[in-house]
Amino acid sequence: MLPGNLALVRDHTVYSCVLGSRAFGLATEESDTDRRGVFLAPTPLFWRFEKPPTHLDGPAEEQFSWELERFCELALRANPNVLECLHSPLVEHVTDTGRELLALRGAFLSRQTHETFARYALGQRKKLEADVRTHGAPRWKHAMHLLRLLASCRDLLRTGELTLDVGEDRERLLAVKRGERSWPEVETWMNRLAAEAEEEAPHSPLPAGPDRERIEDFLVRTRRTSALRSLEPHPDDEVVQDVVGGVDAGQH
Image (cartoon, rainbow, N blue to C red; front, side, top):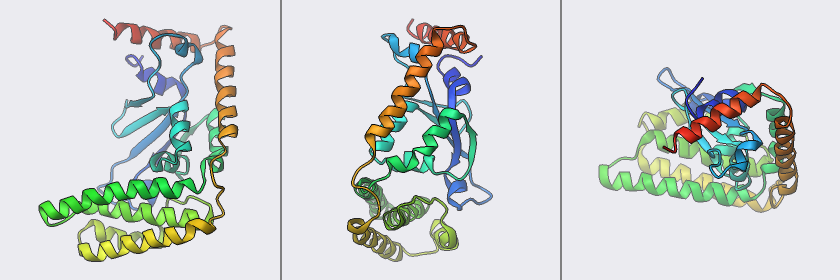
């Protein structure tokens, strides 16, 4: 048995995938394997004062998981990392609940992604510019991923679909990662991608906002099913007791 809350990841993950460079088509021999997942905390755990965690690291290295409700909240806000998790081409595990979640991918997408992605990109760019001022060069790996994100945003607004693989831009982006492009050249590329996204936004096939009602219906149904299952003997009961016991132990 895993200690405490990590049992939630082991026994209640509904969806897990590989993200990062391997999902983006940018992997090299040195690349790590970044895993992301979604777990469904049993409904009885929410009846206590001590609620289940909204996210967890581990148990493996480079592994991070969100509780389903928190995941949906972030996706409704068009959080780039969460939306990319839903669209990873490298799915490692999925349950029936996970398949329902994946079927809702389009319900999370809207023109709001432009504002959220652009705001996130601006924050990342300010960090790169600070590195240039302080050290004379940015963190080139971060610059590569920012370019990838900007291109992904533009293409999403243009097509209505979120595609992670960088395709024919792979070698050009890897050249940035290796520091083989000048910062002014990279800045020009970033400016062009941001301008193209701005131009696409008003004409995007995406709806104005996400389908919050449809997503909330899925979440409520999933919670209700979990609650009903808790009223009859089920193998999950032992897991719930283990997790609750872990929470209690952590309070002393």
